[in-house]
Image (cartoon, rainbow, N blue to C red; front, top):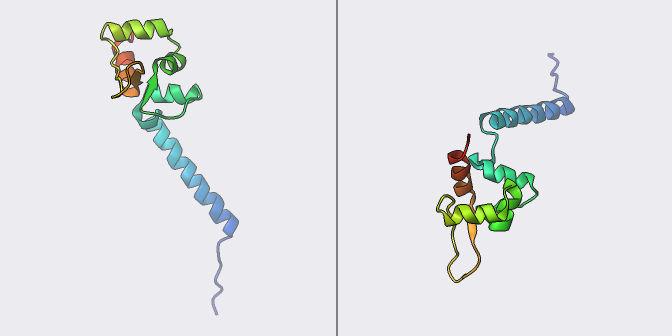
Length: 107
């Protein structure tokens, strides 16, 4: 009669977890930014919740650029922004616009 050996459940669990960690590491090495966005990564690192767009103040907070500079860039047409329908004063800046703005202004 042949003896059937079963794998240790703890070893199987550790192996499964390690495989998941390895997959995550590879994925982060391929694309270290959430959704491919540096701006979103900066916003999350600044403690902001993940969003498609942020206020001028939040954008200044996660980029480290003064709000006056952000507004100057918006006024000059170099940083795209949106004003939601029905809102006269609230201005939002999409993270993809910040990504494009950072790419255009790299030195």
